[in-house]
Amino acid sequence: MNKKRPLPRQTSEEGIRKIIVLEHKEGREAAEIANDVHYHIKSVQRIIRNFSKKKNYKRRKGGGRLQKLSRNDKIRIRNRISNNPWLTAKEIANELEIKVSAETIRKYLKSQGYRWKKPVQKPQLTKANKTLRFNWALRHKNYNFSNVIFADESSFWLHGHIQNMWIKKGQEYIVETVSHPSKVHVWGFLQSDGILTIETFQENLDADLLVTLMRESLTRGANRDFGTGNWALAYDNDPKHRAGDTLKYLRRAKVN
Image (cartoon, rainbow, N blue to C red; front, side, top):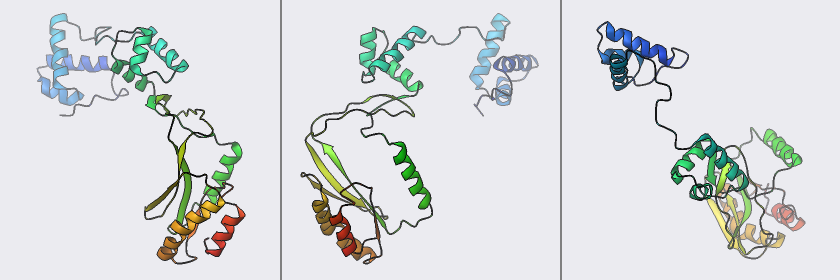
């Protein structure tokens, strides 16, 4: 049996209820009616039973389960996380003294498009950055990346914790970070076959260290896999990537 309700454009719910009652009066079985109107048989039986008692097929106004959150509660919840999006659902319930479970508040916020996740920790792109990236993508839209190796570096902070917060779907939230916290640096590269190589270090990455990492971890293996001069390296425009010593080494290693 098809349990899917009709689309709103086909017939209104009140119209469907009227059809159910009329067809029942004509002697049709509830199962047959349910199949025709795409309602569950129990829903059809309930509509017929209610009509037999009340002689009315219309749905009672205000019927259904009462909402646990009032309109005022919902407004207060939205206003509270606008001021402090780091509050958990349980903390929201306690602060606003709303007598519902944390799960109820969590479900409501999710229904409004909010997600409980960590904010993005990066500077926003400028208009110039966006233009450069877009033009690069246009130039390389038909490029064969099978012999391209992508390399980049990142840092992982050992102290300090960025906690989850309520962020509306489709929006981005940026948080300020400490300039020089304790951290571990990571440099790595990814090949087209999915092989990822990672090197970790604690000193600051400069051109000399970058050349050392490339020589010991990157160029030897890439030349062996692709052949000298037959592969390209892709990275961003970080100053150490464009430093004279770095470019000199890449030319000497015949990296495109």
